[in-house]
Image 1 (cartoon, chains in turn orange, green, cyan):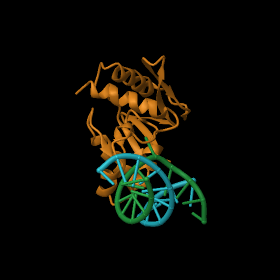
Image 2 (spheres, chains in turn yellow, red, purple):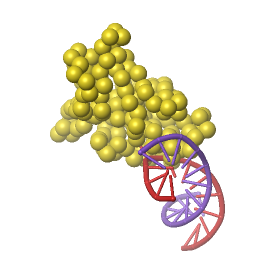
Image 3 (cartoon, rainbow, N blue to C red):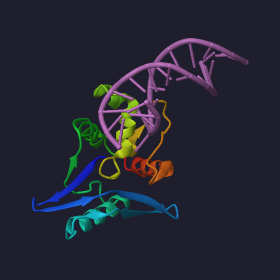
Length: 155
DNA sequence: TACAACTCCGCTG
DNA sequence: CAGCGGAGTTGTA
């Protein structure tokens, strides 16, 4: 699994199990947070939540949260590659796989492990045949569709 | 060893 | 051609 550490001013660290966004009434996005490890006061968390909501409501294009990815080299590479995909753009599993000499299936798996879907835009990765491909069981393909649609209006 | 949010290639119609 | 199905690939649990 990929772990994330969110950092604001070196002294505050907050560990999350997962974060997900989901649809509510087909119109509004809500954010759900997983277990928070350690008894940290969650200034960072609150800020992140606030920023995430702004992002989903198109009030900002950036979620200004600094975070660190803990994982093996490949996971980090793939994650950094995902972060390079700009708003409204998509990449295929195959493209990323070739770049790092991985199998496309493996890229898919890494994307699936990334549960911070707003920070690491795994929803912007699609199949090479143009179809969306699968998505995390947390949000489902409908969430992927919705996120992409939302972002395309920002072009 | 089996699995995975895929892809390639050959076969059929 | 287009559509379908199976094999291939590779790090992780």
